Length: 241
Ligand SMILES: Cc1ncc(COP(=O)(O)O)c(C=O)c1O
Image (cartoon, rainbow, N blue to C red; front, top):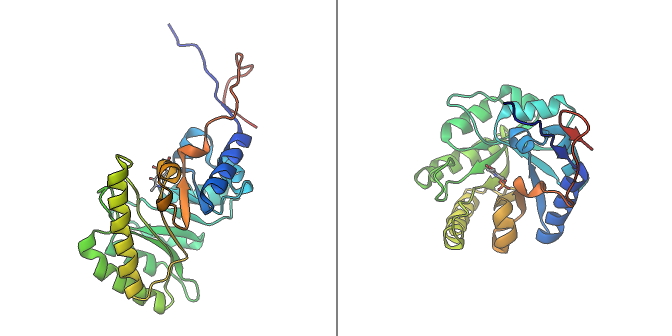
Protein backbone atom coordinates (compact mmCIF):
# COMPACT_ATOMS: atom_id res chain seq x y z
CA UNK A 1 0.00 0.00 0.00
CA UNK A 2 1.38 3.41 -0.89
CA UNK A 3 1.36 6.14 1.72
CA UNK A 4 -1.03 9.01 1.05
CA UNK A 5 0.68 12.00 -0.51
CA UNK A 6 1.36 14.93 1.79
CA UNK A 7 2.05 18.47 0.64
CA UNK A 8 4.06 21.00 2.62
CA UNK A 9 2.87 24.58 2.39
CA UNK A 10 5.73 26.99 3.04
CA UNK A 11 4.57 30.37 4.27
CA UNK A 12 7.34 32.77 3.42
CA UNK A 13 5.50 35.49 5.34
CA UNK A 14 5.84 33.35 8.44
CA UNK A 15 9.61 33.15 7.92
CA UNK A 16 9.72 36.93 7.59
CA UNK A 17 7.56 37.38 10.71
CA UNK A 18 9.80 35.07 12.69
CA UNK A 19 12.93 36.93 11.61
CA UNK A 20 11.31 40.23 12.59
CA UNK A 21 10.49 38.69 15.95
CA UNK A 22 14.14 37.72 16.53
CA UNK A 23 15.29 41.18 15.49
CA UNK A 24 12.98 42.74 18.06
CA UNK A 25 13.65 40.17 20.77
CA UNK A 26 17.43 40.26 20.53
CA UNK A 27 18.14 43.76 19.26
CA UNK A 28 21.14 42.44 17.34
CA UNK A 29 21.88 41.34 13.77
CA UNK A 30 20.14 38.21 12.56
CA UNK A 31 22.12 35.77 10.46
CA UNK A 32 19.50 33.61 8.77
CA UNK A 33 20.74 30.02 8.64
CA UNK A 34 19.44 28.46 5.44
CA UNK A 35 21.58 25.33 5.39
CA UNK A 36 20.17 22.02 4.11
CA UNK A 37 17.90 23.88 1.68
CA UNK A 38 16.66 25.98 4.61
CA UNK A 39 15.75 22.78 6.46
CA UNK A 40 13.76 21.74 3.41
CA UNK A 41 11.88 25.01 2.99
CA UNK A 42 13.80 26.17 -0.09
CA UNK A 43 17.06 28.02 0.57
CA UNK A 44 16.75 30.92 -1.87
CA UNK A 45 13.09 31.64 -1.12
CA UNK A 46 13.69 31.43 2.63
CA UNK A 47 16.79 33.62 2.32
CA UNK A 48 14.93 36.32 0.41
CA UNK A 49 12.08 36.25 2.94
CA UNK A 50 14.53 36.52 5.86
CA UNK A 51 16.50 39.34 4.24
CA UNK A 52 13.32 41.25 3.47
CA UNK A 53 12.50 41.07 7.18
CA UNK A 54 15.83 42.52 8.26
CA UNK A 55 18.25 39.61 8.42
CA UNK A 56 21.58 41.11 7.41
CA UNK A 57 23.49 37.94 6.60
CA UNK A 58 23.01 34.32 5.68
CA UNK A 59 24.68 31.19 7.00
CA UNK A 60 25.05 27.79 5.39
CA UNK A 61 27.17 24.75 6.18
CA UNK A 62 28.83 24.13 2.82
CA UNK A 63 30.34 26.34 0.14
CA UNK A 64 28.23 24.61 -2.52
CA UNK A 65 25.09 25.85 -0.76
CA UNK A 66 26.44 29.39 -0.72
CA UNK A 67 27.36 29.25 -4.41
CA UNK A 68 23.87 28.03 -5.25
CA UNK A 69 22.38 31.02 -3.42
CA UNK A 70 24.60 33.35 -5.46
CA UNK A 71 23.58 31.53 -8.64
CA UNK A 72 19.98 32.25 -7.70
CA UNK A 73 20.73 35.94 -7.37
CA UNK A 74 21.16 36.34 -3.60
CA UNK A 75 23.74 39.09 -3.01
CA UNK A 76 23.74 39.38 0.79
CA UNK A 77 26.81 38.39 2.82
CA UNK A 78 26.89 34.59 3.18
CA UNK A 79 29.13 32.58 5.45
CA UNK A 80 29.83 28.84 5.09
CA UNK A 81 31.51 26.95 7.92
CA UNK A 82 31.82 23.26 7.09
CA UNK A 83 34.61 22.22 4.75
CA UNK A 84 36.09 18.97 3.49
CA UNK A 85 39.74 18.27 4.37
CA UNK A 86 41.99 20.04 1.88
CA UNK A 87 39.13 22.14 0.47
CA UNK A 88 40.15 25.15 -1.66
CA UNK A 89 38.26 28.43 -1.49
CA UNK A 90 38.92 30.10 -4.86
CA UNK A 91 35.34 29.61 -6.13
CA UNK A 92 33.95 30.90 -2.85
CA UNK A 93 36.25 33.93 -2.83
CA UNK A 94 35.27 34.80 -6.40
CA UNK A 95 31.65 35.00 -5.23
CA UNK A 96 32.43 36.90 -2.00
CA UNK A 97 31.47 33.99 0.21
CA UNK A 98 32.81 34.37 3.74
CA UNK A 99 34.60 31.34 5.10
CA UNK A 100 34.22 29.90 8.58
CA UNK A 101 37.70 28.89 9.72
CA UNK A 102 38.25 25.94 12.04
CA UNK A 103 41.96 25.23 11.52
CA UNK A 104 45.30 26.70 10.57
CA UNK A 105 45.14 24.89 7.21
CA UNK A 106 41.76 26.42 6.39
CA UNK A 107 43.15 29.83 7.28
CA UNK A 108 46.04 29.36 4.84
CA UNK A 109 43.69 28.04 2.15
CA UNK A 110 41.42 31.09 2.57
CA UNK A 111 44.39 33.45 2.30
CA UNK A 112 45.60 31.60 -0.80
CA UNK A 113 42.25 32.34 -2.45
CA UNK A 114 42.64 36.11 -2.03
CA UNK A 115 43.48 38.21 -5.05
CA UNK A 116 45.17 41.59 -5.23
CA UNK A 117 43.08 44.19 -3.38
CA UNK A 118 40.43 41.57 -2.63
CA UNK A 119 40.91 40.02 0.80
CA UNK A 120 38.81 36.98 1.66
CA UNK A 121 36.25 37.51 4.44
CA UNK A 122 36.57 34.99 7.24
CA UNK A 123 34.88 34.15 10.52
CA UNK A 124 37.27 32.44 12.96
CA UNK A 125 35.55 29.69 14.90
CA UNK A 126 36.67 28.90 18.44
CA UNK A 127 36.06 25.43 19.78
CA UNK A 128 34.46 26.10 23.17
CA UNK A 129 33.30 22.67 24.32
CA UNK A 130 30.94 21.27 21.71
CA UNK A 131 33.79 19.43 19.94
CA UNK A 132 32.08 19.70 16.56
CA UNK A 133 34.64 21.87 14.85
CA UNK A 134 36.41 25.13 15.54
CA UNK A 135 40.01 25.97 16.39
CA UNK A 136 41.05 24.11 19.55
CA UNK A 137 42.23 26.35 22.42
CA UNK A 138 45.75 24.91 22.14
CA UNK A 139 45.94 26.33 18.59
CA UNK A 140 44.41 29.73 19.27
CA UNK A 141 47.75 31.53 19.60
CA UNK A 142 49.17 30.20 16.33
CA UNK A 143 45.95 30.71 14.35
CA UNK A 144 45.27 34.18 15.74
CA UNK A 145 48.82 35.37 15.12
CA UNK A 146 48.66 34.16 11.52
CA UNK A 147 45.16 35.56 10.98
CA UNK A 148 46.26 38.96 12.26
CA UNK A 149 49.31 38.88 9.96
CA UNK A 150 47.22 37.88 6.93
CA UNK A 151 44.78 40.68 7.64
CA UNK A 152 47.65 43.19 7.93
CA UNK A 153 49.02 42.18 4.54
CA UNK A 154 45.56 42.46 2.96
CA UNK A 155 44.83 38.80 2.24
CA UNK A 156 42.09 38.32 4.82
CA UNK A 157 39.35 40.44 6.34
CA UNK A 158 38.36 39.10 9.75
CA UNK A 159 34.62 39.65 9.65
CA UNK A 160 33.62 37.52 12.60
CA UNK A 161 34.62 35.51 15.62
CA UNK A 162 32.16 32.75 16.43
CA UNK A 163 31.38 29.46 18.10
CA UNK A 164 28.41 27.14 18.57
CA UNK A 165 26.63 26.10 21.76
CA UNK A 166 25.51 22.64 22.80
CA UNK A 167 22.18 23.85 24.26
CA UNK A 168 22.38 20.92 26.67
CA UNK A 169 22.10 23.16 29.73
CA UNK A 170 22.37 26.81 30.63
CA UNK A 171 25.50 25.99 32.68
CA UNK A 172 27.22 24.35 29.71
CA UNK A 173 26.30 27.24 27.45
CA UNK A 174 27.52 29.83 29.97
CA UNK A 175 30.81 27.92 30.30
CA UNK A 176 31.14 27.90 26.50
CA UNK A 177 30.42 31.63 26.40
CA UNK A 178 33.11 32.26 29.03
CA UNK A 179 35.58 30.22 26.93
CA UNK A 180 34.53 32.16 23.85
CA UNK A 181 35.18 35.44 25.67
CA UNK A 182 38.72 34.19 26.34
CA UNK A 183 39.10 33.62 22.61
CA UNK A 184 37.83 37.10 21.82
CA UNK A 185 40.29 38.57 24.35
CA UNK A 186 43.12 36.52 22.86
CA UNK A 187 42.17 37.79 19.40
CA UNK A 188 42.19 41.38 20.68
CA UNK A 189 45.68 40.84 22.06
CA UNK A 190 46.78 40.18 18.45
CA UNK A 191 45.02 43.33 17.26
CA UNK A 192 42.01 41.50 15.80
CA UNK A 193 38.85 43.63 15.88
CA UNK A 194 36.05 41.67 14.17
CA UNK A 195 32.90 43.29 12.85
CA UNK A 196 30.75 40.77 14.73
CA UNK A 197 30.95 38.11 17.44
CA UNK A 198 28.28 35.42 17.27
CA UNK A 199 27.64 32.27 19.28
CA UNK A 200 23.87 31.86 19.78
CA UNK A 201 21.56 29.86 17.53
CA UNK A 202 17.79 29.78 18.05
CA UNK A 203 17.61 28.25 21.54
CA UNK A 204 20.23 30.45 23.18
CA UNK A 205 18.98 33.55 21.36
CA UNK A 206 15.67 33.03 23.16
CA UNK A 207 16.78 31.66 26.52
CA UNK A 208 20.17 33.18 27.25
CA UNK A 209 20.25 36.90 26.46
CA UNK A 210 23.94 37.20 27.37
CA UNK A 211 24.82 35.00 24.37
CA UNK A 212 23.29 37.36 21.81
CA UNK A 213 26.50 39.40 21.44
CA UNK A 214 26.53 41.19 18.03
CA UNK A 215 24.50 38.68 16.01
CA UNK A 216 22.41 35.53 16.42
CA UNK A 217 22.29 32.69 13.89
CA UNK A 218 18.68 31.66 13.45
CA UNK A 219 17.83 28.46 11.60
CA UNK A 220 14.95 26.42 13.00
CA UNK A 221 13.54 29.51 14.72
CA UNK A 222 12.76 31.14 11.40
CA UNK A 223 10.27 28.45 10.43
CA UNK A 224 7.05 27.61 12.19
CA UNK A 225 3.80 29.01 11.01
CA UNK A 226 1.89 31.90 12.53
CA UNK A 227 -1.32 30.05 11.84
CA UNK A 228 -2.24 26.51 11.07
CA UNK A 229 -3.42 25.56 7.63
CA UNK A 230 -6.23 23.13 7.15
CA UNK A 231 -7.67 21.07 4.40
CA UNK A 232 -6.19 18.69 1.90
CA UNK A 233 -3.72 20.10 -0.61
CA UNK A 234 -5.09 20.78 -4.07
CA UNK A 235 -1.87 19.94 -5.93
CA UNK A 236 1.15 17.78 -5.50
CA UNK A 237 4.49 19.31 -4.67
CA UNK A 238 5.70 22.00 -2.38
CA UNK A 239 3.96 25.37 -2.46
CA UNK A 240 5.69 28.63 -1.55
CA UNK A 241 3.86 31.87 -1.08
C1 LIG B 1 26.98 26.70 13.23
C2 LIG B 1 25.48 26.76 13.27
N1 LIG B 1 24.88 27.92 13.59
C3 LIG B 1 23.54 28.03 13.64
C4 LIG B 1 22.73 26.96 13.36
C5 LIG B 1 21.23 27.14 13.45
O1 LIG B 1 20.73 26.42 14.55
P1 LIG B 1 19.17 26.50 14.90
O2 LIG B 1 18.46 25.75 13.84
O3 LIG B 1 19.08 25.83 16.23
O4 LIG B 1 18.81 27.94 14.94
C6 LIG B 1 23.30 25.73 13.03
C7 LIG B 1 22.45 24.58 12.75
O5 LIG B 1 22.84 23.45 12.76
C8 LIG B 1 24.72 25.62 12.98
O6 LIG B 1 25.33 24.48 12.66
